Length: 200
Image (cartoon, rainbow, N blue to C red; front, side, top):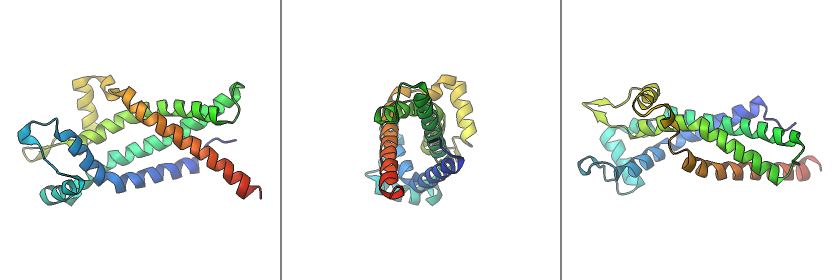
C-alpha cells in the first residue's frame, strides 16, 4: 500500500517545522513590508529592502523580534505537511478503490487537488494567527497580543468564526498548484527510484 506511514508523516512534519524556524526572519520582514502600504503614513516603517528590514528590526526591536511568531509559523508548517501527506494518501487510495482511476498522473493530479483543499481548510486559521502576531505593534509598551489563542479569540469575536477562512479561494489558488506539483514530482521520482535503484 502507498499509505503514508507515521514515521514518514513525522519526518515531513519535522522538516516543515525546521524549515519554518530558519525562514521566520525573512517572513517577518516580508509580512511587515507587505503591510506597510496599508498603515497610516505616520505609522509606516519604510523599509527599503529585506536586508534593511532585517537590520532595522534587529537594531530597533532586538534580534528576538526576527523570530516573532516563530511558534505559529512552525505550527502552520507542521499542519500543512501533516494535512498534505495524510489527505493525499487517503484521497489517492479512495480514487484507486473507486475503480475509475489507475495509478497514473490523472489520479495523482485529482488526489493532489483534494489534498490542497483539505490543507487550505486546515492551515488558514493557523496562518491568520501567524500573520497577526508577526505584524503586531507594541501598544503602551505591551505587545498587541499575548499569544496565538488570544489572536483566535479576538478574530472570532470581532469578525466571526468564518473570518478564519477569509480569502479561501486565493489561498487555495496558491496552495493547490503547489500541492499538485509536489506530489506529481514525488510520484515520478518514486517511480524512477523503484525502476532504476530498487529493481536493478
